[in-house]
Length: 257
Figure 1 (cartoon, one colour):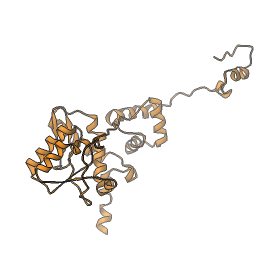
Figure 2 (cartoon, one colour; figure 1 turned 120 degrees about the vertical axis):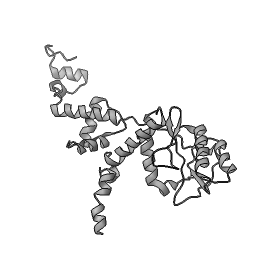
Figure 3 (cartoon, helix red, strand yellow; figure 1 turned 180 degrees about the vertical axis):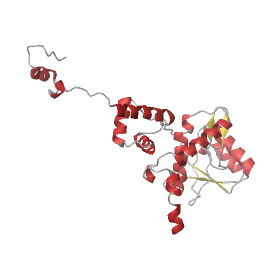
């Protein structure tokens, strides 16, 4: 748009086009070799951990010895057009007309969670009661009946107020087995906040991004994620450390105490 050979001075051309005169003399700088290498590694990490934002990527890079700030990571992400893949479901709202039961647990609660696979449900490794909820009402009822058949009837069964738990087909099973029904109310998230936060990470960073072909694949993938969560994933609540670093590094101090 700017004609440097025109008789009209550049300042007048800039004024007519309503652009900054300083921009006429700006020459874009090429990307440095260091940033190119950093962007290449960020791209690899993004493919492996598509849920990682600038904060987590900066932590992963720092663990590898790269001294780079979060703002610079965010700048490079924008230059690369990199966006986090983070599903935002909305399954914790009761459907209109569903009955809401009172919250009977204050210290702890039993949760029903389901992990998705293409042809059924799978229980995460190391868990009997907790499963990652995904597949909705029909699978919730199936998993509930399976859990009761395997482990017997609890006195109280606690869930959130998601429509898959408030639907009559689900609550009828509990009523039939004479189990007291409890549902989280406002503010009750504090009673189990640490486990809830862990399950949120498992769902958003692992389960929602995959469709497992078999139970074995689901268990193996969940095991890999839990290993990553404990040993490699930086946590902002731990000042960028992993749970393993926060726990094992503090053991000598606990022993001394």
